[in-house]
Image (cartoon, rainbow, N blue to C red; front, side):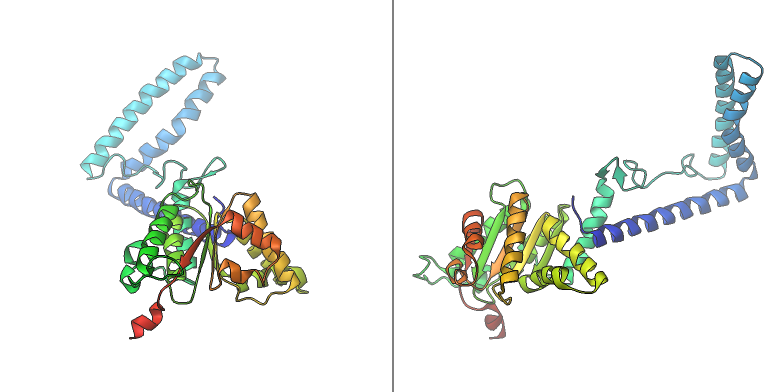
Length: 332
């Protein structure tokens, strides 16, 4: 998983806070038990020190270590039995004073070797959704809340079907794409159509589903994304350039990039080059991208180079959005 650095940092911080709270609670329970049953403290100290003491004595006096280990085992079993009796008499479970991690898979470290543990992955997904919610209203936007009744049933000759029939197909396609993310042959989508037709809403639905599946998702407008590439290249401030570089790396490496409102940015030779780099890099590395635009593929021909259009036409599934502006329908 290639979660952004900021998302991973916040997730690790939450894990450390959770670990500290667990340890504090464990320590408070241990103090309570020791105050209630003072003998427990001496028993625990004896259990902690008996192993090195017995083995050290065995080697010092030339005894057979196996005899010493057997004697140690017998001694420890007696101490543990007495300890369990005292705990039960005081109303504690024998496991209450054990130092138990919340995640036994990774011992609360967040990692299993070089692989991210599912507990840390869960925190990353939560932090990523919070980050996406700053740009997308993920509190309301989900597939279950998508309303088809805003799309009319009259035939649109240019498309050979009604807005409702079209959106039923688009919605079903996007749901499958999100639910089986990364496992379908189609990796890239191109949403196109006028304003207020649900492109951003469906992008948010996909972002939520894919994020909850534990994948890294980044959403931003085309203007903002390409401005970061420009800042990285031309900024004279070292810190600003470094920050822009880190953000552009996130755009290039995330498992799903949602690039909204393509065509609204100022098109310059540098913007063309940056857009080509973004699209081509993600294609060659097999990363998934969703691009939405108010312009059709034909409309974009006059704005972008043949190299960009060739990749959009050849590697992206084109999904049209048409009908009446939902924002205006809601007002009326």
